[in-house]
Image: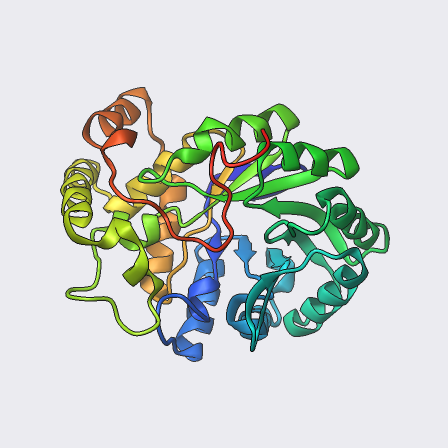
Length: 325
């Protein structure tokens, strides 16, 4: 698989997002999840992404188990700043608690260093410079190698980079959700920061393989307007065109959607997630698909940005124009 650059990090062109092993898409089997992670490594994926909030620690423990004996094969990234408790979900980026969050993640992951440590969401009650300052101390002390931020405004991204080099910004980005192209992506490129695209398959929409009928218990797509009523019908019509183009190239629609992201620049790494080892290996295959100008133009014709319907649903996510830029 080809490689991409995230600041000073070199990773596989396709990474693995692990959230679905612990939340958001209904119940999961840990044994299948561990097999999926190991299948990703076998397929050449080197970026593995988790977070302390996914399953309230469960995800990091599972990922640590899956990487046992293979830790040196991966760029391991995790995140702090979203806290789940009996009182609900909140953001916490207070400098006094950053080290404790990091040390707890290290224990769950079974490692002595995190390659890429993100602030999962900015804390509205704490200046981002203060949070990143505490994160920088983790780098100085050897607990973390590189820093990242997730779902931030361009202004916050710039401020973070003034405190310490930022390797990557994580944002939802896909063929069907292109809002970051308005401001976050250009800001990252001005600063030399790589882009990690989560939900790069549109939360399953772009695979052309959504579950039949209604979404099951615990599946957060049930509350996402992109998957409801006329919006879904119109989006599926676009997916049908994506499937047609993918078939002409001998690829799956998911692979073509991932290849589209990779083609946006050498600083972009999508992190699709799947509990199915076969699907994970399929996704990894997108790293070997090279799209030329004609391919990209064809995708713009059949699935233009303005044709996709609905708004995303994501906790405390940045929206273009919502605050500082």
